Image 1 (tube, one colour):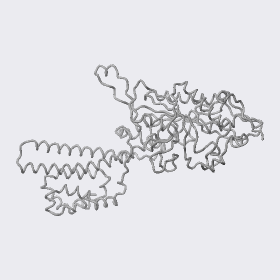
Image 2 (tube, helix red, strand yellow):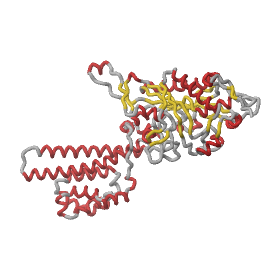
Image 3 (cartoon, helix red, strand yellow):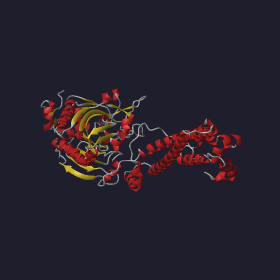
Image 4 (cartoon, rainbow, N blue to C red):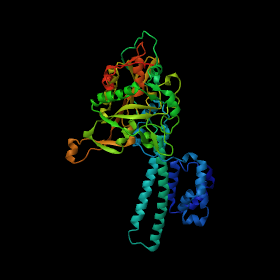
Length: 528
């Protein structure tokens, strides 16, 4: 950057060698170079060219620099030379521990590789170092401004006071320029750092989905003595679904439930609620529209490529893909009492997903749809308790599906399949005879403090005996958040219809659901 300007450096050095503002100029010059965003591709000639008039230079060299940088012509040059300098302002800022990331960069880098993430750690560290140095320069310049202000408090000659006024104005204008650079640099750093995924549990298998390990297998594949049907054929024969009319009204991958299928959905919801509430979960119904910023804070990308999120045009709102989003947002920017933890919710909502890229036989019928009903469990707890509650969530899921007589397996999901928020995730896949494969019916994730740092959810621990003696409150900490599917209705209907079908075309209702269906024991073909 400096090489091409050294030949003309003699005149430049002459200009500043006798100038009392040389120190200020050098510091601002260094800060601008360190910032590396707006000014990094400009040469020194661009700075000095407006100052080659001796008279103007002697009067206010630093002021000319700041005005030149703020001029439309200079800004246009900057935009052309460094288009990457245009950094979007983040709508929100996660409380990311950048110092910890820098001190543990090797571990963070390995974690990014293990999770197959596109996060750019080198950029984060580079921006962090530049921000650190620039902040120091700003602090030094503020100290000089304060020193000038203190000098002006005493009795001074008019000429001396005028010199101090001039010097204070120059320092003030320099601070304005540096503060703008610092703001841009901070925004760029925030956006880059928010792409770094959560840490990973040491027991998580590394690799793609095929590397996931079996945690538990429950039940056995049911043997049928007759040709089996898939849920689509069963639904048609029993008059339970209408996909054709829904496609005309709403588009593909929408559906109507009819007759006993409606009762079955209500039964699944009410039975699951009754079971989960006995475990201390508070029932909720939630809004089904959320602000885009809340969706992002929970770890979803509402406007990314192949997003699963429906955005509402002309607004900053989205349709939710899971009740995890509004439940997490319910305590946003709050400090919880230690005595209130854990907070355990089971939330009912309709969910909306674009299912971008989903096609083929694996996505047929109710298995992959754009809208569905779901009950989601969500826990906010102390950091040291999240592993315990993760096990509790898995236990609840396994108990629910065992009670319905399903054959399923629980998988410890591999690192590539975790998504950015999850520290560890277990999926449950149930056997679906008509589809001839296992299909995911639930997952349970421990997100540690990834979401709470973005949502701003803290708690204040009870004071220790020593802190009580000193009369001090314990510092706040971020809670840990966990989520798990209690019942995703369409896929549960797939499992029940296909596993409980009979040779005569009827479908048996599992015993636990019968009281919630008015005592109905079997769904039979409608008489013509």
